[in-house]
Amino acid sequence: MKLYSYWRSTTSYRVRVALNLKGLSYETRPVNLVAGEQSAPDYTALNPGRGVPTLDLGDGTLLTQSLAIIEYLDAIAPEPRLLPEDPLQRARVQAAAQTIAMDIHPVNNLKVMVYLKAHMGLTTKGQLAWFRHWMTEGFAAYQALLPEGATFSFGDTPDLADICLVAQLYNAHRWGVDMSPFSRLLEIEERALSLTAFNDARPENQPDAA
Amino acid sequence: MKLYSYWRSTTSYRVRVALNLKGLSYETRPVNLVAGEQSAPDYTALNPGRGVPTLDLGDGTLLTQSLAIIEYLDAIAPEPRLLPEDPLQRARVQAAAQTIAMDIHPVNNLKVMVYLKAHMGLTTKGQLAWFRHWMTEGFAAYQALLPEGATFSFGDTPDLADICLVAQLYNAHRWGVDMSPFSRLLEIEERALSLTAFNDARPENQPDAA
Image 1 (cartoon, one colour):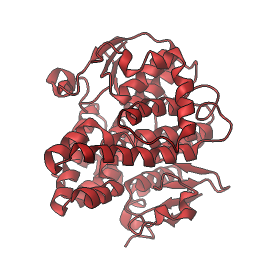
Image 2: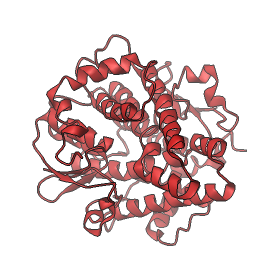
Image 3: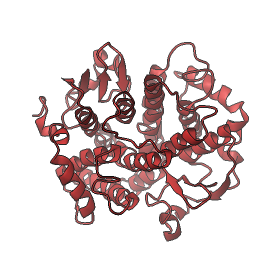
Image 4: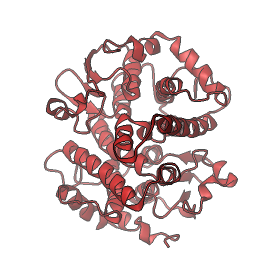
């Protein structure tokens, strides 16, 4: 498989973790978002949404959108499971994952920052406040969705929600979010990053890390 | 079942369509987002993300996040299917749905507009430009993901992608998006809205419509 991705993209980070947990090998094809490579015609032919990641299954079959990709991987390589089979438990894990993937990530995306700077005079200080606001709100909601007694978010092995969480926490640290209300989330992060599958997927461990 | 929802919320609209397509009856519990009812303690106890919809399965079991809810409904009431069983086809429908649910909807959400007005002086004109920008980009990506020859987005019956599309098109019309590049999407919308399940779910047909 070939993973078109960017080292600092949290959606790319999610798919890297999933591939690693499943033991599926892949080649990284870097797409430099800061240089605008996601808008080059060669790439938009692969991903009309001009985003990362894009997964080439190896035969030219292309998948986009990190959560759709991870659910596909969970179907074709079910061990270890990243989503529960039970519909109710599955819905709970997905709701937590989507709290990060829909309520935090899209509004903090690079393309949104570019728009706010170009059209609304967003300052560096304003950007920090923006990032911190949406992450603080989203992490509070995420933490409130978690059951008692699990060592990861929902169980004793990492799932889709943990993957989304750990990738987002990279941004939280990068942008100086006050994590003092979220000790449960930091414990999950520490446990996850002690696993090779997560550690190898960290932004700084990618071939295109600058 | 009880659906906590707001008439104009496109995420509520999605779940209404899914419930109607499945023939599952529900009571509407209006949550007035403009009046801030999503932040009332009684409601945040149900939905810590302070959003709609929330689905009470009838026994007090609560589900949040529209896509997680719809996937749950598709598991417990599989006819008609809203997501294909085949993993690859499923990933394609989900990627299209997520193009709307992640790349368009979150950045145009009411809470984002409130923040931009309060902190960045967003004007009415700026808001319109913002809405139109993200919808135009997202619809272009969505349309490019569709196969040839289907009468709905991916097949001859509506699926999760169609549900997300039709709900988002309500906002597109409301905010005057130029839909001339998207005739395929308008054809899908017309076909969908001719079905009772979609028509009954339209914002203007809800008990809390103002």
